[in-house]
Length: 82
Image 1 (tube, rainbow, N blue to C red):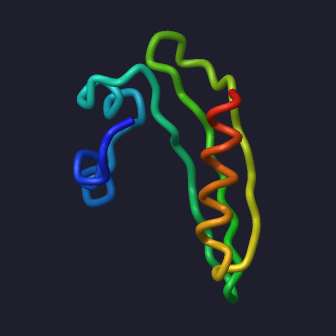
Image 2 (tube, one colour; image 1 turned 120 degrees about the vertical axis):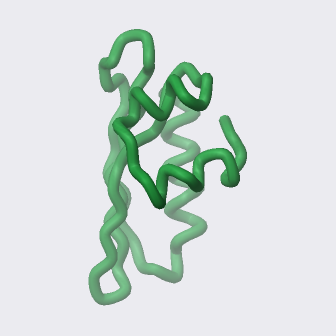
């Protein structure tokens, strides 16, 4: 887990997930997309471990923009159980 400030650079200049993991000195990263259409969000996320490059966990989450924090909690909860 890294603070937002440490990963914000990847929003401006994206790099491949495994390169980001190496640069950050972490074992895995969560990669994915967020789509917004007419106030609805669709979040697709997957866990990418640096050592195996496998994807042991993936999930899709959908909800209203007003439910952003609940969607964030759902992603975090499912990721912690992976």
